[in-house]
Image (cartoon, rainbow, N blue to C red; front, side, top):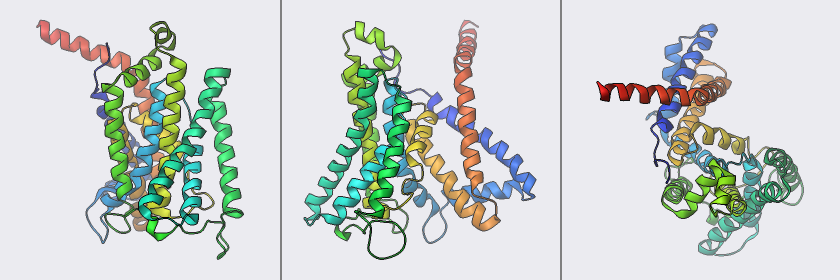
Length: 357
């Protein structure tokens, strides 16, 4: 009826790709004249260590939160066979709504915070519905429509922080700080690790159960595998695609809201820094599996954290090396996906020989 719920390759492939990427990164570091093993030690300790006033691993957990949410949003699109890349725009619109309401509402936190979160999710959901409807009803390529929507969101962000939401003080284009009563608490101050991380993990568990334990999830997977076959089987694929992309957009909008309420407390020029696009990488590296999304988000956040705090500050190695390492991991995952059928057949052949022997 359905595929097995957990595929070990979800963990094996990202880990192997990470080690291969690290090997190539070592070769690049050797060119700089710095000891590669010292560099990797600094990278790991700065991204996943337990030293300093604020343990790096807690900062990595905080930095992984938006990656988990945007990765989950992208993953849902992949599950129904749609390569929607509008998470960037959905994330930005969710943040804009959160910053606007957070600075203008005068309500008790118990009312205001849920209202801000729901409003941001609605904004992201509406933004997710646009490419879904365009694809299902008009046959518009979702990549093209997503690119256009992402560009629109960037322009809207620039306008909002420059004019309607702009703070009076300072030269930088940014909004007013939201009411402090609406700030989501952090478990360790300065780490960004807080309530938003818990919300992200709860959503991961929820969608894992939804995808693999419910009829909705079964329909999503069937539509993703073969849309025409699903239609013949009585599944309304168009409705499943629209519904799924709306939910994915809502989650990406939630990611933007969480960053405003739990971290930045305002929006500014360049607010996103490509987090929506990072979600695509997370979903692909995580093999479109909720568990894989969490693992990859943690690893990518740690690599970036280590590259910025460790390599650049301590060893004067450009932090862009972290980006190179991530790009290499993505490359190796892509190569592995090409040869995955052959690899699985080889493994099964070896297993059968052992059983027969």
